[in-house]
Length: 234
Image (cartoon, rainbow, N blue to C red; front, top):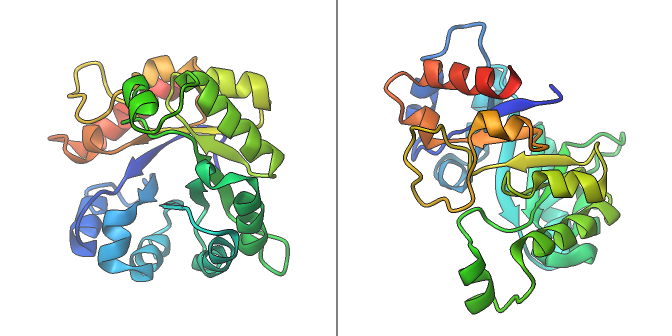
C-alpha cells in the first residue's frame, strides 16, 4: 500500500452501478476504493470479491460497534475477505478494540489494517455537546479516542482533516489518519461539517483521503480523481 493515497468511496446502491463506474477508469488505473454500508448491504461479500478480483485495494467501511465478543467474531469473518483496511467505532472502548484486533488477525499473523472512527465529520460541536452530551471540545474528544485506539494496538483512526495533525502529534507519525470530509474548493459541501481541500490536507498530517461525491458525481470522475491525487500528492 502507498504511504499516502486517495480512496474513492463507492457509494452506489448496486454492484452493477459500481462496476460500471470502475469501468470508466483505464485498464491500468486501479484506484484504492471504499466499500461502505450501502453497497455492502446491497451486494454483500460478493461486492468485495468482484472488486478485489479487478485488482483494487479495498477499505471495508462497516464501522463495527458492539460488545467485544460479537465484534471479535465479526472481524474473524471479515479477515477472510482479503480487504486491505477495516474499521470500527472507537466509542466501543478499548476492550472492544482489542477483541477486534484479535479476531481480525489470521492464523499466520497477517491482517488488514484496523482503524477506529473517532467522530463523524457530519458531527459538529453543537451536536457533540447537546445531543451526545460530551462537554469536551471536539479536538480533545477525537484525541482521546485516538489515544485509546493507539493503546489498543490499532493502526490509526478516521478523523476529520482538522484533527489529523494533532493526532499525529499525540499518537506518532506512523499512526495513520484516514480523513473523509475532503472537498475541492469549488465542490458542494453537502452534509459534511468539518472539511478541507486535498491540497490543504497534504500539509495537515492526512495519510489517506476519502472522497465520494466530488469524484463519483463529477462529470468526468477519472479527471476528478486525478485532480485529487495531484492536489494531495503534488
